[in-house]
Image 1 (tube, rainbow, N blue to C red):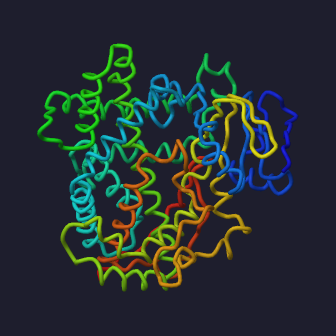
Image 2 (cartoon, helix red, strand yellow; image 1 turned 60 degrees about the vertical axis):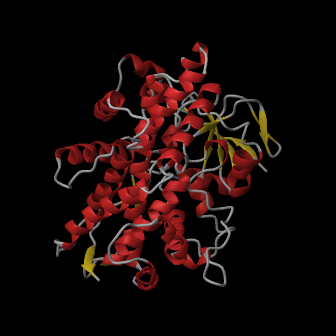
Length: 466
C-alpha cells in the first residue's frame, strides 16, 4: 500500500487549487489510480488522509472505529455549531457520547408507536393530491422537498405545511442555497487571515444558519412551555424529556454537558440532515426510474400486491418490498449523495495498514469511490437493482462496498428510520403514479453541488396516475 504525500507548489493553499473545477471525491479517486488507496493531501494548512477503497475505509470505520471516531474542529464547524455542541459536528468525548445516547433514546421513544407511519402518510398524501392536479411535466425537487420537510417538521415539531405556505418556501430557499452555493467549504478554514475580514460566502453561510435556528427556536420554546410527560407529541418532546430525566439523575458537573444549546443543536442535526438526504435520494430515484422504464414496471407489480391504494403507510410493508428496496440501494450507490461522508479525525496515533496516521489528522472517506469501484461492482455505471437481490428475489446481505450511511461510532443516527422511510415513500409514489421523462428528453446524470453533496441537475418528469 502506497502512502503518498502530494505536495502543491503553492504551500499556502496546499492541494486546494487541484480541486477547482473537479469535485474532490472524483479527483481523489483519480489520484488513487496512481498513488494507491491511502494518500495525504493538504487543504491549506490542514493535513488530511484520504481513504479510497473498501478495505481501508472499513479498517478505519469498523476495525479501528475508536481511533477514527473524532470530528475535525475547523473554524467553520465550531462557529456554525455553537462551539461544536452538535452530534454531527462535535468531537468524540464524554459529552458527545452522552448526547448521542440521549438522541438515540429520544428517537427510539418517538418511533416506538405509529407516529412515523402517520407522518409519512400525511406528508405523502399532501404531495400526491397536488401532483394529481398537474398534467404537465414538473421538477420533482419541489415536491420531494415538501415530502421531506413535512416529515421532519412532523417528526420534530408536530407540524406540516402546504406547498404554497410561506414557511415551506422560506425553508426550501435556505436549504437549496446550501446545496448549491458553498462548494467544497469556506476559505476561512484554510486561510486563517480571512477570519478577520470574512468572505461574502462565509457571511452568507452564517446568516443562513441563523435563519434556520431562529425558526427552530420558535418551536423549541413553545415545546418547553407546553411539555407534558403524559403526551409526547414529537421528537422535540422526547429529547426535552430525556434531557429533563438526565438532569434529575446527574450531578451539576454533568448537567453542564446537557445544556439547552446542546439540545438545540441535536434537534437541528435531526431536522437538517433528514431533510436533505431524503429529498435528494428521492430526486435521484425519480431520475433513474424515469430513465429506465423497465424498472418502474417491476416496482408497480410489487407495490400493487403489497400497498393498498389508500390508508396508513405501515412500516411492516417494507418487509414485502424487496425489489423496491433494491432499487433504492442502487440509487444510493450510484448517486452517493454525500460522497465523502463527513470528515473524521483520529483521536490517537494509529495506522491504516502499514501507514502511520498521527493523532488529530483529518480523514476523508471516499464513499463515492467505494460505490464506483470496478473491483467490487460489475458493470459499475449500469443501473442494476438486481445486484442487491439473492436468487429467491429477497434482499441479499449488504455488500461491504455499500456504505451510504457510514459505519462505526459515527454511523448515521437516523439510518434505521431513513431506510424504512425511503422505501415506503418511493413505494407510495409508485402506487399512485407512472413516472417518465418528457418526450424527447434524454437523461443527464451529471451531479452538481460541489464536493460534499451530490444533487442532480434540475430536470422535469411526468407523474401520470395509475
